Amino acid sequence: MARKNDPEGKRLPIKMDSTSNGEFVPVPLDKVQRGANRLAQTWATDNAKRLSVSRRDFMVSACGAASTLLAFNAANAAAGRTGGFFELSQTAAVDPEMAVEQLGDREFVFDVQGHFVGEHGLGRVGLGDSDKFIKDIFLDSDTDMMVLSFIPSRREKELLSIQEADATRRIIDEMEGTKRLLIHGRVNPNQDGDLEGMDELAEEWGVSAWKCYTQWGPNKRGFFLYDDIALEMIEKARALGVRNICIHKGLPFGRDSYEHSLATDIGVVAKMFPDVNFLVYHSGFISGQAEGPYDPGRGEGVDELIRSVEENDVPRNSNVYAELGSTWRFVMRDPDSAAHIIGKLVKHIGENNVLYGSDCIWYGSPQDQIQAFRSFQISDELQEKHGYAKLTPQLRAQIFGLNAARPYDIDVAEVLKRARKDPVERRKETYRERPDPHFQTFGPKTRREFLARLKARGGTPI
Image (cartoon, rainbow, N blue to C red; front, side, top):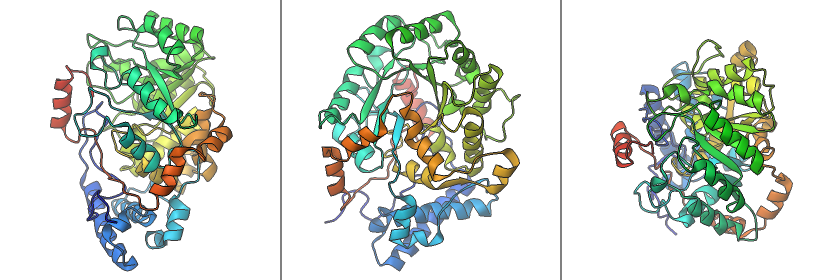
């Protein structure tokens, strides 16, 4: 049976392109990255011939992913970008068993930042279809659980209303109660009605966390978490018993209220509220800024998150969590920054407090992010020079999902026991006999697309 998606196998299974999540202007690929994609295409053709399979069959196999990642390694090494690399055997590109052994499903994967687009969505056919969402997330990737999150907006412009999020969750929950999806409650304390609405979100909708954007405001003016209005939000979250607060930090929307996009305030409130978990989305990362060794004087990016936590005497592995949505996806193309980001976060925030998130569906299926992280390694040189931890299978498993189980109070063994028998898993088993991933992304890919979307949404990102 012919595959419907990309039948000629033109798309790479590891998607390195300029796509953003709609919160930041897309950054074009540089010369090395474009060359890496070309090399990956050439290797795909050659390796498919060696295995006597079509390009499409090769691309959807584990060998296709391994071949692509190995091509990226070669292009980066030739350019002197060796701080990080994808740790794969060269034979994985043409040995199906080895490719599956090195890139196949083996961890509990809990994606703490996912998105589903509702009626005010991207305008692309099918993105508001729950069945296609389930295919991208749960059939075409190794994701076991996901948290549906929200973006900043006025209520009438929400990309995903709480009702739509709950309806999507129920599609899966009703399949024998597997609880594969959790939902956030959006709260922007500087918007009228949001603080009052927290009661309904907690009591009627059963949200598992709150999502806020400190840079966002109805008049383009944000807030700090230690401002009175934000402290009221935190106190109310404590009173309602939902003590996970997810805060967008980094990926600034522009110069408006830029200071509120920085992680300067995280350590302050984490010290004030040790019984509240602060999940820092994007870990403060700023696209277009390379990340190097920790510099407490830098004042931006991941370094500002670390500085804020350490200068406020917030212990490692306590109540501040560094989340990797869009951050990991962006630095997959920059192995040096990737090595420093993962290395710094594990070293300073804690090996138990770094969380995997994909920010999909903006980037299509998250399987390429999973495969890339599953094989990523920090160079021996950077490990020795900066005291970074080696990415062992255990550490990867912690970041992929075990760490997030703690703040979300997930019994991993019980979740996996139920999931291995649910209809989604049975559907996955049948589907993977003849998988048909599309290898596409859905967020804006150019500055023009980004600005057009910004205009269409009245100046609100995404």
